[in-house]
Image 1 (tube, rainbow, N blue to C red):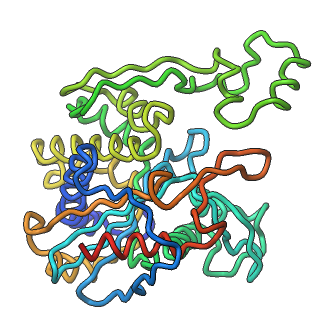
Image 2 (cartoon, rainbow, N blue to C red):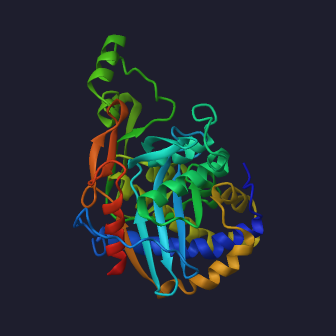
Image 3 (spheres, rainbow, N blue to C red):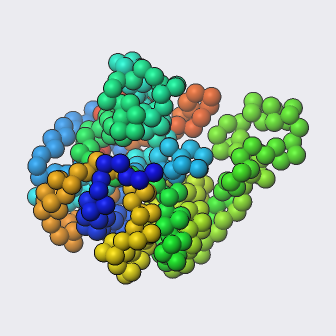
Length: 367
């Protein structure tokens, strides 16, 4: 479906300038995070008096989202959630990685809330059947994006000004049209449980009684592992790897090799590879089928009139210090079980108490 609220000229500006800035920052982010240079791990006291977020004309908060898109299981669920908070005056870009399994209250029935994983927020917004009584601002496609922006604001204390969402499933065709891309794989990678499309409901020769027993004994990934015929082993060697669209999609969507944080890094490595190929071939300047396909993979609420202002505020991306903040069980979160025994993450301070999370972010930004 074509991008509904941006002209191709506007997308040209976003992809050619703003996205290049963000991708460059993210490249530094994952490089330094992998080396554990900026990642903060020490938990803060629950009583830490965190500074309230006070966005100004000098700070830009952009929510960066990655999802599988149409035709893929869970395509409306977010695979990666990163808040980029750019202090244009202090020349510091903070990239806050939020795990998709983080559990919190969302306004699903007007003022009434129910607990969900944060990666479900957009899907809840667009779902008219299961969640028909949401507030108007959280209904439909635009409402779905507003709901996940709201959720990120609750967690971090930073209200996103804008979002940029990438449909990684849609990139498969674009990459094939580009003739493939060369991706820098930072380390050898294996996932022994990558889902095979079309085999989601295979019984793997198990009897109905055995399947019922497994559903009673296991949940989440442990349940998935009982049906090994539904999955394949994917492997990537360290170094520069030439990938076609299908291979790149597997690399970006793989869930079990290195967790949410690693998947975010892999997704943006592919974005960097696409940006390099697009720049080398001058795709944006010349247009054509590849450019048309790229327009179908990106959603944003950054309007044409806001582009020049943002670019002027951002300035030279090389002037920025990149600070990565990865919310995880190594600092301010702990694992728990949600409805049906599903794996979830909640704050150390308790369900829906994000005071320590905000304090952790505030302290990290002050250093």
